[in-house]
Length: 116
Image (cartoon, rainbow, N blue to C red; front, side, top):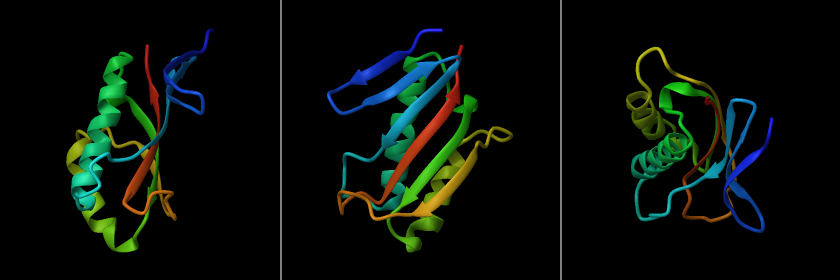
């Protein structure tokens, strides 16, 4: 099985496909003016676009690691999260407090999903 890389730069690939799995590197919001709900939605929609570009979907997300900059943002993150995944398709997840590299980032997500 061949490794396929997407949006490759010198330092990283946004996504890698291998053996019917997609590995999506840390995704963050570009619009840093938004609150946690706006940033969470932007990140999830960006992840969905990556999934769709590789023939997958939000229903096929297997696991998400969430890096959250502030504990106070947990409820707002969950409000958007709970609406994003269809009933019965919630992936496994781990949410960790983290000091993110850019102080404007409120959330970062790392994803593994199934694909054809």
